[in-house]
Amino acid sequence: MEALILAGLLFTGSAAGILGALFGLGGGFIFVPVLMLVFGLAPTEAVAVSLIGIIAGSVGASTVFVDKGLSNIRLGLLMEITTAAGAIMGAIVAGFLEEWILMCIFSVIVFYSALRMILNPEKVIPPSEDDDSRFSFEYNDEANGEHVRYKVENVKSGMALCTVAGMISSMTGVGGGAVKVPLMNIYMHVPIKAASPTSSYMIGITAFSGAITYFIAGQVLLEYAAAIAIGAFAGSIVGTSLARKLHTKHLRKYFSILLIIVATLVLLQAGGIL
Image (cartoon, one colour):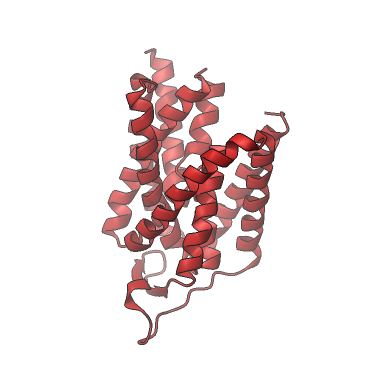
């Protein structure tokens, strides 16, 4: 592999790893188009390499976030069950709908989520003594030195909606974090500083199952995947440090801006502009 290509892959992996750790989006929205447009990979090859990068970024981010108590493991595993079910359903439904329709649906949902996060302040509900302890959690916010206690609301309906997130992710090929993080933050009242790390943890599990399939089929370009993975892992460590230092309102604002950018890019792709 040429040194210039290696450097480009490492840089791409690092950038995606930073953003993935910051916002819980996994980085697939960066990996796939860059690998196709810049490095000339076929769509299947780009997706396969992207999944390896997502796993590496998730491992790097989760190593820190779980240790700091930011990733909500219990909630993540519960939502992953319905997300996986939704992904299977989405793969079936995708065969009956035009691709541009799927992309437009995704863009509308993400635009709506971004606007809700911009217009509505974060609502964190502290648990009371009578609340179910299974859904009461806490973490230390290093940015302002506070100990945050929160209760997850609407768990059952949130899990049901996560099925939709899995369907959308499967049908469009865009990471479900763009839907799951707003869902946790807006509807289930999980603080953004816990929602993003929880999404990062979940995305790694989902990507692993997909990567195994591509690896067995021999569709993973190992040299590209290794470079992307190294960059993503290093970038995710940097991203976790930034995420812990950012104040909640800034993190939500930047996340909303990124959602709008992602939705716009997907909409342009649906229109054949990209």
